[in-house]
Length: 162
Image (cartoon, rainbow, N blue to C red):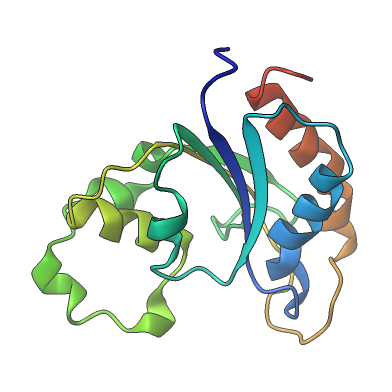
């Protein structure tokens, strides 16, 4: 891998809602590792349109998020935007006017960026099927916590340093 590429690893989600805090917990672990100088690690919190601002200037962005895809709790997903069905459908700026900010998640934010003609970097989403994203508590459920080392391993592999 070309070490001069600027890479951002961004954790998203709400740490106060159990498994939705996956991104934050992963970022905590990544900050303890010696990563290449071209890699920046950041916790972005709950996804909103400001994410489009943060990805500017990077060649590659790896997002870490709890992703509901209907699998078993703890299932790990590695997705590119073209793998997510509604990201490949046309989202028109006209339709955006009718979208509630409460509907925004990481995948929809990426779709909105594409619809607005933003130049997005190479994006990878590494996520995990949550068990609980509604209980107000800090901490991951057992199955998601058990998936965390594999998620870190996948990120390191993506950086070609595993």
